[in-house]
Image (cartoon, rainbow, N blue to C red):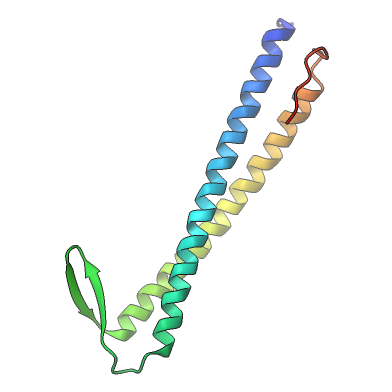
Length: 119
């Protein structure tokens, strides 16, 4: 059996890595949710426009005229993509939480009881 101190340190390091991964997934979800809100705002503005309204999009330093239907389809497509990505990331978050909880239990149940770890 490995040295209890080293075993405990390895478990603790693995737990910390899982927590870091989880934080990364949560950050990614927050960014996606922000993009989703922004695109829903654009979608709402498009709904208020007349069919003959002019829409422009920025491409580099240039404003290009865009057909309303084309712009609406682009925003709807982005929203679909973002929603799928949010679902994918939520799956990763759930999986990471489960792994972290198992690792946390391993750390707590480690025979090295003299060290108290607060999470």
